[in-house]
Image (cartoon, rainbow over all chains, first blue to last red; front, side, top):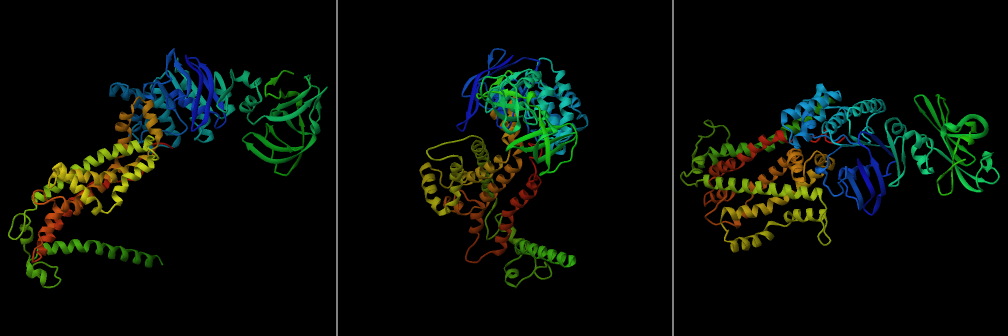
Length: 343
Length: 280
């Protein structure tokens, strides 16, 4: 089991990781979800040994890795950039870590061939990386990471530089590939909540160098522990709507709702899917994003910026007036401290 | 319009080619002339305009009125190749360190240290000549091949460092890190991953070192007397009360021959895009 305990890391006086504690079971895929700058890459690089933490401990099966140099850690990593050795052909690229580990060259070449066949590059083994497309280059990097059979596999947004279609196809391929890698602890960093919800056995939400929540993806999605966690795991972003609780929840111009809460100031986290077209509130369209089969509409309503999600393609233009209804009862309530409140 | 453009373009190329090739051609014809051929006006066609002679070439190999350039040629070869090899080796290691690790000495950082290296070349040679002379005299290395090699290393290594720092900076650090994760310690990473990808840089640095080393006259002249003569000094020593243009021309051709061969050999290594496919 890979464990990190109270891990903190500062670079150029900027804290990148602050007191991270987590454990990762062998044979599981954990998705680390967070926005850019949340600390996902720093965590991966610390586990790989490319960054030395200020404090805390990293251990695999009880053996302390914290000060172990990267070349002594049994870790494989695929990064956002497609890193391959330009002076070697595709086969030698994949065989490289095996040869360095002392595997005989013919055996390493045979294993490289098998790994490249698994990622669909059997016909490109003698080419140089520069002769491949971006997607093929990333497959080479993935094959090189898989061939090592390292107990820890770090995937740092490996598909972010690929186009949408390729990304979807790769994601499915990767899940299939990893299913055969029994006993490997896989960490997958992502900025995309949908990807994280599809892929992981476990999910870790990160923001500003901290773990804000971890658990099973659907549980975390259904019950985010805090407003920050809700903002990280929702895509489109959750709408934070402040309200004041007296005998009822008072949303000002947006109406009231009969929540049972102690009096005070709260924030309602309303998912984009809980705002519907057609309703009493007149909103102004500020932006429309059509993503294949759905429409994300950005609205201005009573001085508030809201995002609405519809499961259909609806042509709208900025400046349009639109009546909307808000399903306030479906929202999540967060206290002044940001923690979620049961309602 | 296009015809005019092509005409102008090729005319310019031809004129420039003539400008570049003319001195070589002139030296070549002169090397096969004698005093009569040289003083009889501009002549080009052997046997028609002048009677060719190999006296000039003979004088380079111990013939009448000349010297044997074989020993100075060998000396130049030994000094240049050895100094260049040492400079490239040390300079490449220094450049990799400067490119990849952060150094701090008093107020100086990596860029200051890199500039310190190249600043050795900013100074006029005469400033360095006296310290070098005194240093070699103290070490008992004046007028010797080891002494010249030492001085040339001091002169050539800044060039190697300067070229290679820039080249290593162009190699993504991600490549080093990936090699570490593939089980290479920093030395193996340098040897197995970085160096093979730095070949074009090494070739450029090597070319600079060889050209500067081979063509140097000033230090070869000021730091040697009679025991250790390098080719540029030997060529100048051919001059006497009567300038033997034929011998000088032959010697000039001998002195540029290695560099011409070198240029043809290394040209194929100077391919652009050597790092394509490293990091996208």
